[in-house]
Every structure is written in C-alpha cells, then in structure tokens.
Amino acid sequence: MDAIRFYSRTGNTEKVANLLSEQLNVKAESIDSPISEPVDRLFLGGGVYNMSADKRLKAYAADLDPATVKEVFLFGTSGSVFTIEKQLTKVLKKKRIPVSDEHLFLHGVMPKMGNISGHQKKEIEEFAKGAVTQ
Image 1: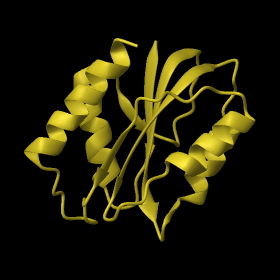
Image 2: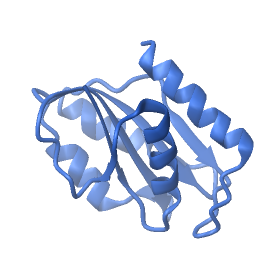
Image 3: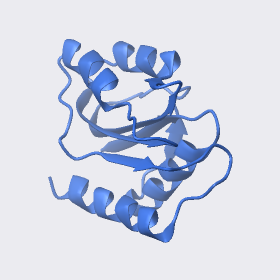
Image 4: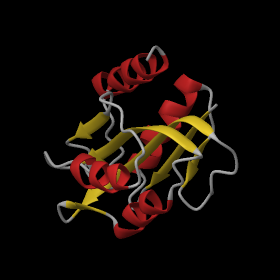
C-alpha cells in the first residue's frame, strides 16, 4: 500500500501531489491526514519557504512511525534551486525510516502561478513510474 502526503502554502505542491495521485492511483492528502495503516511507500512533499522546509512538514516527518512507513519518496516545488531533501532526509534518518534515492523536485514553480509545464508533468509521470518499479 502507498500513501501521498503533502504540505503546500501556495497550492503548487498540492498540484504536484494531485498529478502524482493520478499516476499512482493513490489519494493525495495533506499532512493533516494521519497515516492510519502501514504503508510500503510514503510520497511526502513540500515546498521551500525562505530557503527551508516548513516547520509543520518537518514536525510531521519527525512524528512518523518507522513501524508504519517502510520507505519515503520525497517530492516538492521551489521557485529557486533549493529543495526540502536534505532537511527531511536528516529528520527521517533519525527515525530510521529509509529515504529513496528516487525523488522529484520541480524548480521555477512560482507561488500561486500554477505554472507546472508540460515538461514538468512528464517528470512527475517518470518519477511515479520509477518509484513503482523499485
């Protein structure tokens, strides 16, 4: 079983989560929705705000139970070159939750513009396919 959780202030990461949801046939939900049963893969996404992952997303990752989540696949959006990867990987590794080398970070996605390009949609599709074949 898989799950998709995200935190999005501007709606861009939510759009990516919903496109990923279509590819994986898994409902995308905000981090306000707890994981109620064990998952093999958790797709966890967020944006970069002031060069950092949001504190709520970091707290969510810190509260994950390694008995419930086998592996995390990170994704996110950013208007710049920064990602949430290092910060969340550090938090997840402390919890002994493996983080996949497969990840998706879309850059140049400006707040509230909804400018996910055709090329970026293709990246989402390829990310989903790569994660499923792992």
